[in-house]
Length: 291
Length: 326
Image (cartoon, rainbow over all chains, first blue to last red; front, side, top):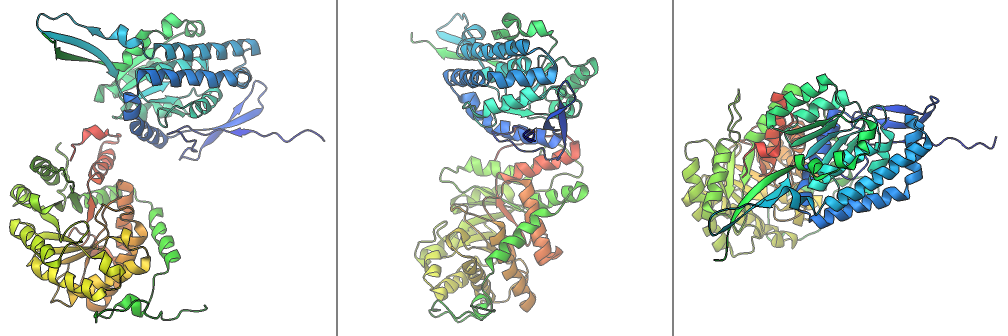
């Protein structure tokens, strides 16, 4: 009898920089490939969604006004922290999704590279998405991109870490606070990623991660009038319809994508300025020239 | 120290001749006050009761702006918000708030906007917020505000005199201010954040109530006691408000006159407003659940109340920018 007692992690939500339990008190077990319980995760309710929006609203002014340089630094810091916990993430991915350890490790590495890529774009997309417009008169006329606002993210089942990181990093890079709903069936990498956010200078409330059922959280998220944009991957046709209908009420920017696992690795498809562009609004300003 | 003993008088009364219940009978049990106050936050208020509670809380608001940078247009915007807190049509519509509370120099502007709307014009006076002025100046302040059209006066007591034990002086200034009000309702700000102890809060409440009571015949709701100026932290807290409500209750039980209560400052969420209403109901009863006897001094609370009210009606979480500022 020298086997140690299993210490199984009870994962909590990530709201406003803290790790609260769901107000509903619900949880469910996470099983590995051999049906052994390896963790428990919270099943978030609509009130947790409300609390996450409150946290994001408090964080919004600071994050929107943060310099592009700082946003880039923080995204890079997230990559640094993820690098240090590469093995832990790889084993969480392979044990819950059934992919080989080698493939899981490649996914973690791709996620790190993805964060570095968005860190780089943080002070460069403005040059691509903004411009100086030609005018006939003694004026300058500039168009500058500004963050849209609080963004809801719906992560797909697979790839469990890379897709979530990609979907969170894009709006974050644009200056939008994010509320992400982890995948129903592979929530563990998302929960671990919230620990990365908590330890890498991300201001409280800028990233909020909920585990639970997409079907339950979809409606309060898409109807919440404080949420300005939605980014979802691999929604079912009926989910797409209900999201678009509900989002029409406050004219949310809705951006829904459907990618294969291989496509998530394609930087030019999922991590270019065109993945930041849906989460910025263009502001055009006239300024007198010095003539 | 075993058992309950009548506490001996700690401070000299300096000419004050009132009975001072707190000194004579009981000092406040601070452990029990905190525990009792916390218990009011455990009630479950849902559905219709919640909607009604939120409406009631809106109708009890004293919308307040007390800043050096207040401008006439800021006051007018606040008055418009007071009359119509939410513009979109709702059935039944959102009630107007109870009053708009401003500095004396803005009373005329507010009175012009609010005449005939049922919304009262309240003015802070008596050298708000410190009260550190000669009594003649402070009384002149009250008269000026009343002449400009204020029908409610929020006065501050001299905390310095109170803490030094010069109770008679404090009682006398309250009496004179009450006489200067000439029919306007009076709210007496104790500034509990500066009074240090629950005993002092209770002592100041009793002193204020007895001072006005001894000055002439009172009607229900003529006089309020109010926690704070909003300029000192901590402002209103539930235990402090409970101590004051108990002073009001004891006065009612011995005289039959209903004194009003106004917690002010620090109440920002609809949830805590409902907690206060529960505390009033369970301490004083339904008779006090009216804007004539209970007020909230607040400004940011308004939009949170509206937000929760609209959530109840539409089933949808609202954005802060769905509601007007001010």
